[in-house]
Image 1 (cartoon, rainbow, N blue to C red):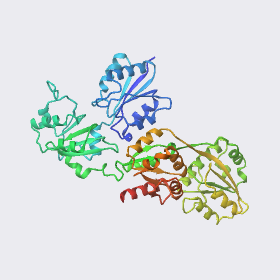
Image 2 (tube, one colour; image 1 turned 180 degrees about the vertical axis):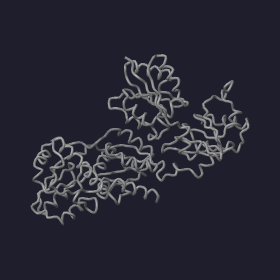
Image 3 (tube, one colour; image 1 turned 120 degrees about the vertical axis):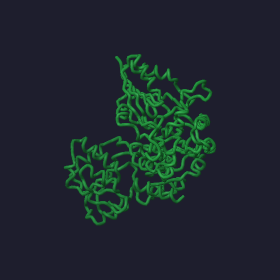
Image 4 (cartoon, rainbow, N blue to C red; image 1 turned 120 degrees about the horizontal axis):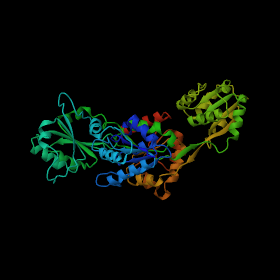
Length: 506
């Protein structure tokens, strides 16, 4: 039984540039074999049972030789497996995809090629350099910059490149930059021709150095620019001055730790990434259902006896309705109940189940719910409060004082997570972290537990702390953190807005 191999272009680094088909092929694969330049976040598209094999392919440092990779592709396919061969950029543009295809053909293994966005196009675009422009040039060439300078006979026709092509893009050419520059000038390219080098193109680590053929070697050396980088030679480089859209993002290059539960971190990661930040996910909690559903089941079975249903979080809404549906009931059984929610996100989540909240407090804290309920005739009424274990007691206490009967039911738990602690501490030790974000008191408490007590002050030195609201900030301050940013609106967009305001003021 033979499997199949998909030779997939993973794109240039920004995981958003993976093609739809590439993503689908990763999802259906039994084995994912990936390179150094393929974004690790693309592995999240793989199925939970898929085997993931890293094969390196970093300049001068290959975890597995090309012959070894070829053998591995054949071996896995002959086991009847679907193989996703994930290669940086495009597999057929200096990606050795053609060589891998030839090996598969010889072995009789079915394969498909899934083109990817090559760094040769994407990196200049993210640097604000259009490779063609009718005012400058309509000719373009991609060239390997990897050719050895001491080669007896060059396979590159330097005279044609220097005189016949408007824009030249050299891939893998940083080490050979002096040789490339000298060869172009010697064969007629004017020394004042603009040049740009783009490192880690399309990622939040992107760095661009510009100059001319005459100055670029010195400029690159002074900037300490290394591979992986591409080289662009031509008049179009001048357009970067006005078209530099990516590297000017307000959080560009900032490394921010996100401690929110992985299943909920996407909105925060997306918003920060769109502003140029590099987000490192180190979730300190995971959201889980309660160990025992007995009390929640009883509340659902007697739902007709409740007058109010109060949700304090998106999780409370999600887990309550999951259990309601699991017990064979639906929203019709809630038709007589008045609902209250804390925060716009919670209200929006409730609306997804067809219910518009009757009571929406002015601010996003339990205290505001209490204020709102003072306008409600709650004396003698019965209130169901499905929420997290160990939540703040103020809500049930104050509602009870108003004369209501409150059933506080544990609907979900925020359990501590300690995975990748060593990697977290290594990042803090390297002083490469600009900010840590906390979205709840539990994320703060659990994060603090991961840090060795005797090293806490040293590791937190010069790290900005951002909190989603005053309650979270109070928890952080009490645990020894210095909170620099507290959101005025206690939502994810509010936290991002506060971070942006802080960064722009520093």
